[in-house]
Length: 562
Image (cartoon, rainbow, N blue to C red; front, side, top):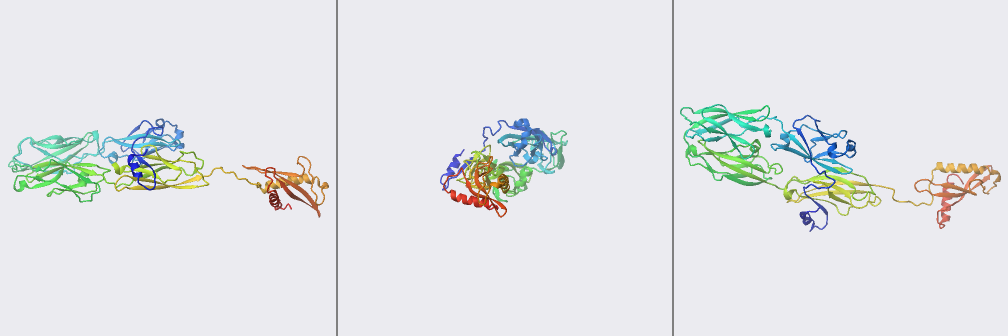
């Protein structure tokens, strides 16, 4: 099927090409199984751990798996599993780390296909990787300094950094507690997603003159069995009165950043104000509740409020960021805002071509629609940048056909003729629709093998010297019995089953002919010799007989029968 974008691309080019626009949709039909096969495995399982047996799922006998070249192909081209063709068992090909494969995404699903050939079939499948509690909650900053004015009213809350846990679901951080103390309680707040962060809530007033400093321990616990926990030490310094908290210009900042922005690029500048004077009006900017990845990607200048890039962006990995930012004055009061960073895709990934199978040579009498190659294409970009057009050269007896998802087959379109052309170099070109347009080419060599489809007409069939000698020996025996009837220069007249004085020689092989020769036995000086006088060709037209007689006699007499 050709998409509208592909047709517009084809118009205006001087050389018309057959093009197929890749849409990432599932095709129906007999090539693709109607149901998605689903398997699951716990992460960190040993190599060659049993997952499932696919024989019943694919509807084929175990003896057919090897014959049909059964195999599994993952969307990320990594062989996480392998298929045992002797048993049909699906086995782990590596230790699967759910956090490395899916980060915090839940569920962690790896998509793959089970592919069989002759006939070509695809079965969609999913591998669900289950999380185990193999990570401990960790605070990025294990020692926290918190400055709180003594005038803070009971009920005032102070945000704490949340703990990081690479596990997900029940195995992720589930709860926070603090060590017993006379002034603070702990409250959990929702950050807008699945994660929660802790806040210290002032329960009893502070008195700097009585207690200028105090310490509490913040504890994060996950929901695993048994649970794991991590701690952070909080040092609280009680300050004199500061009655104005910083205020940002905007509660939410939104910015779009191209993914190819260079390092140290300024993303945006945030700004806050504080009505207090002196140290209580001096502001310091920082991120709050920032994950390790966030801190590795962005940084904020504590004085100017400029947000810079510390690492390159990649739209194909992360499309957006939510950054919590705070401005803290010299008295310890904080104002809050949020930065929404939208990563803009650029066409920075060329299409990829992966050959799955190639049949070469192919018979020249192969019928149309014979599968020559199966391959897969993909582009990591999104939108128009990820849409692709797939084509081959014109004026070739081959065409491309989309089969399943982003798989294509190269098939014959018309009969082949090895005698006309015995080899084809076919260049597969995949071009995306981004700006600038990127393309990838892959050339395959297809040989055409010969079949016996041409008939050679010959006047005389060549026979082996052994066969010819056998015939002549047989004739000699029959003729020698009648030596008394021979005279010098005269021809013998054989009797019996041979007709008159003719020798019958039949050629063998795919194309056989029958030949008869007139033979005479000559004697003189005590020797007897055979002479082929002339051949008789019952199947040849009369014209040109004289030349054939001369050539045939010369050929046979060359063996010493003169």
